Amino acid sequence: MEGGLKPMDAEQLRENAHKMVDFIADYYKNIESFPVLSQVQPGYLCKLLPDSAPSEPEPLEAILDDVQAKIFPGVTHWQSPDYFAYFPSNSSIAGFLGEMLSAGINMVGFSWITSPAATELEMIVLDWLAKILKLPGDFLSTGEGGGVIQGTASEAVLVALLAARDKVLRRIGRDAIGKLVVYSSDQTHSALQKACQIGGIHPDNCRLLKTDEATEYALSPESLICAVSHDISVGLIPFFLCATIGTTSSTAVDPLLALGKISKSNGMWLHVDAAYAGSACICPEFRHYMDGVEEADSFNMNAHKWLLTNFDCSLLWVKDRNALIRSLSTNPEFLKNKASEANLVVDYKDWQIPLGRRFRSLKLWMVLRLYGLENLQSYIRNHIKLAKHFEELVSQDQRFQVVAPRKFSLVCFQLLAPDGNEDRAKKLNHDLLDAVNSTGKLFISHTVLSGKYALRFAVGAPLTEERHVTEAWKVLQEKASSLLCKQNH
Ligand SMILES: *Cc1c(COP(=O)(O)O)cnc(C)c1O
Image 1: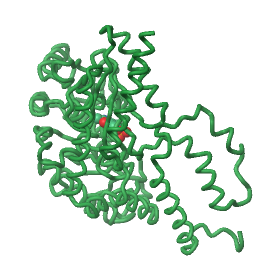
Image 2 (image 1 turned 180 degrees about the horizontal axis):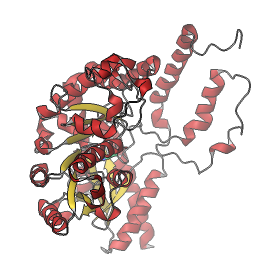
Image 3 (image 1 turned 60 degrees about the vertical axis):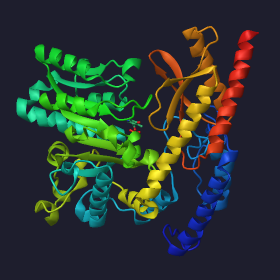
Image 4 (image 1 turned 90 degrees about the vertical axis):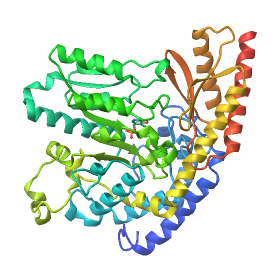
């Protein structure tokens, strides 16, 4: 390169970034032409790329050609309108622009002084969203609480658990850690188990209380009372309850109001995981799923799932920010500064695991401003309408069955075995999943509910329209017909 490397020359940035934006815009334009689920085999890429890094610079064009030819085949297209697997992970123009700006500024905002705007915008935007969700005032930064952007829901539940653990241990003594007990339903995300492992909770003291079809896979208050009183009677100490609004498997909603009372009367920390369904609660007609959140100590939702904010952006609110800070703060000499010492500011490094943090509030701010609440609400409503449409299509076909009530934009369903045999149904649905996903025309995932193997159809990609849902159902029907036909012969 002439005159040496200029890694951040403004004019070169302008030229190259324009090319990259064009490349990405074309990607979105053609996204339907790719197989949604990548069809490559493990290790495919090392056969296509050299085994050492180049010593001479290469042109951007050559690299973008490689992206087309070698990288895209190994990409599963989460932004495809035919993506219906797991839960969505939304991208949007607003989110994208926010990410871009954040990459441009590229600061590391661990304490207020490292970029005051980063800390203060995060506080403001999280207060905005807390108001949209009608979270109790205690969660706002104006009181004892506040919001913080974590990378993921897994980090959110971990820091909540650590805060709760240390709060109780300060009272009863460090040595009691082996007696602490955590509760949740068996539908709770495995992130809780990981948090317990990291948090030093005795593996025997994590209660995953059984749920079933009768309670629509929600945690029953009776089973919680039962487990808590038994544990107390043998000298254990209940300290943490994780309730979920919209479980990962089937979007079950735990009854917060009743659970909150139990956790409060037993001095437990209540964490509410609304990673996916929290976004729906910005609509007044779905807000009731959060009733009882008044009793919670922490509340989490992923704006990066279903609220048009590019990954990663997981929002955590706590009522007692000092509990979090006492658990996670350190104060090394090299980070000391006047504003922090005078206790005038929030230093988000003390609210999370890492020190460094990105300017993630920018993209959420962009999303809220460029779209506005009303558009976001109709965005959610449209996906729920499309999921209802899919649910109707499933119910109209006698060969299929919806296996859990649809609350938001996820439909859990099953192809019935003609002879009603559950083992055969499992194999049949497993084969159906493979068959539809290997067409590349759509991507769905699966779960197991009460021992039943069920297919999950989650609407929520920003580009999905009714025609994509209808077309996906056609593919499912065709593949089901040919599987059933094969079975008969
Ligand atoms: C997706 C999801 C998680 C995990 O999300 P990460 O942000 O990837 O950690 C946790 N809980 C629920 C209910 C989820 O839907």
